[in-house]
Image 1 (cartoon, rainbow over the protein chains, first blue to last red):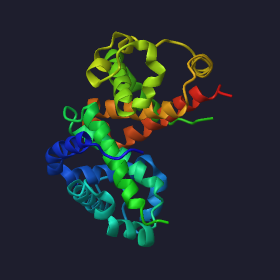
Image 2: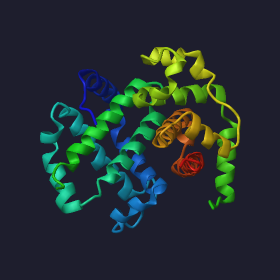
Image 3: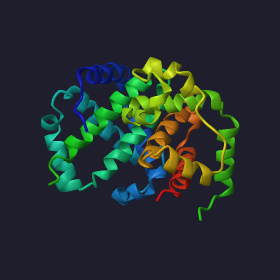
Image 4: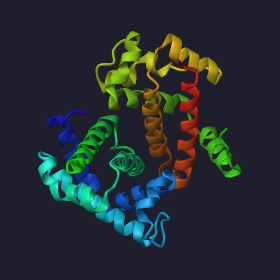
Length: 144
Length: 131
């Protein structure tokens, strides 16, 4: 896919300035949704006691993941370099199939649409979609 | 054959019962054309689609949509319109986002799962007559 234009980066940073205030909620909701709507993703969390939306492990992990997204916004000018250690983590330790990045991205977009219906315009949607795709690509960097 | 629980049927009926087709339809389609610009190739005859504003106010976009069986629609999309079936999924994703924005927190994970299951069936039915 394409790299992010200056316009895309501007749209992401502007929208994120508002959305970041609810980052933890977004992360928890997106992760919870993913586990319900795409049950195959539960295989990565078989060590959790409770995988239902709103449960403690889901909330906590949602916060962790969204923290990563927030960090990526600040490194938007060089995602590959900025996400190097996270890429190594996902590639060598977690070994998450990269197809799942797309699934989580979709659910993040759904939650953003729910929480920010007026701000999540088609223009912001395309910029965020591209950003999350670029993020996923940077995360896949160290896989092979 | 796809199986539906009573609860799933009731969720789908409720979503579509409360839907303003004239609002959601154009919104979902124009969002799709903006978020996935290559889909504009199928609407070349619709006139000005060069930016978000033009797409949103285009009368042909707003009027897009007919009533037919899925077999007929599938043949139409394959034989006459030559739409790559991958695009059905893109439009389905945009529809999900538009409905989510409309329903807000009522669009719970369970409702989302049911709605996406329904759209997947529609997408599959539309692709069935391709060869």
